[in-house]
Length: 98
Image 1: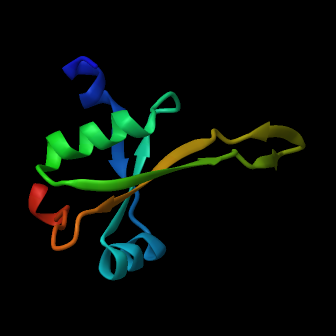
Image 2: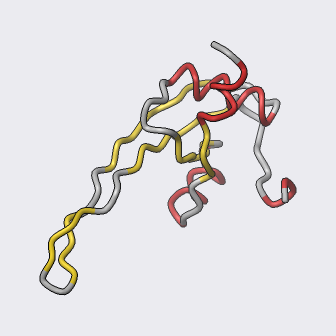
């Protein structure tokens, strides 16, 4: 896989209460990824960008909600997330990256 594709796979870290609990207890981190991303691409992207060893990757597809606004029906965009488990003793610090 080329370097450009690997750098475009991760869109952003998913920051939520559940994601924070996963990071604290299980050394797992949640990222929003592009819809066409694969597990191996996510693994390579996290390892190159954050210099950590990835143990496993799980992917989640979340469908967009159907909503009604002023009598018009619409649908929000769906999201694809990746839950990345790091090797024991490693962590990613998002606050230091800013």
